[in-house]
Length: 325
Image 1: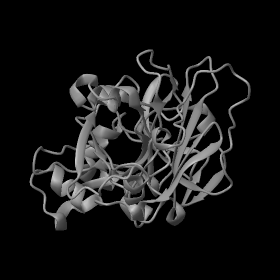
Image 2: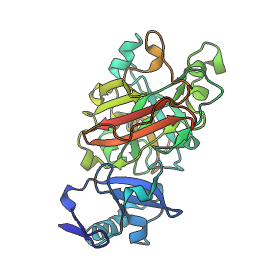
Image 3: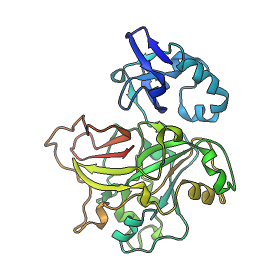
Image 4: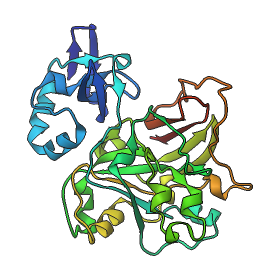
């Protein structure tokens, strides 16, 4: 099956397309779409069919009802927009919950000489923490210890409570990548905020996300993916999701014992070793004057999902995170 776009005279081979959902702004309108390839042009679902909403969370809620529309649209002549004509947003916004799993990589536990948790360690951020993959983040005045944590992130597709491990994957819409930004002085300093992690984890803009959500059937095994983070061009984290202690099924089943998971909810699944606070000596993202241009090309390999975080519009610190398929 082929899709032919008459505006740019390009023919796309549909069987090779990966379902990589994105949110974006084009001509002042919020839209959702499907990337034709990683970093490539985008099928504008919202502009091609009025049945499609302008945000991905609403699409996820209506996914079953819209499947026939999607199949019909991808087999016809939908509107394709050039990537440079849009502003990418975080792929999921205004979700009900942003949940996080701590201490969930074996090698991350080893780097801090901590025991591997028997049960998932759950904490949270807020939906207002989410920013897009290329948005500029202002360095928060409240911390001097801003740290990075690249994380594979689950996007919930179906509501559920007390979900069985065997049924958990039925509740997954897809996966994306996030940076669990952390103010270590507020998270780890004895006596700060009564020992609670919240202020160190949930400051404004502390969840860069995206740009794409990849569906499970296209991603393959989510527990055998390369996971890397670079800071100012230097690789700081380089591991694999096969190091996860608690994997997708177990995480969803455990969390759903305590709360109702909703479509669009995000679960950051934990970070591998290489974070700044456990380096010797500790390293953190710093404010310093611009001395180099931020690269626009990250690697010749095709990454499934990728974000870039720029720390303050006036300074040069930046952080890339990606998952390799």
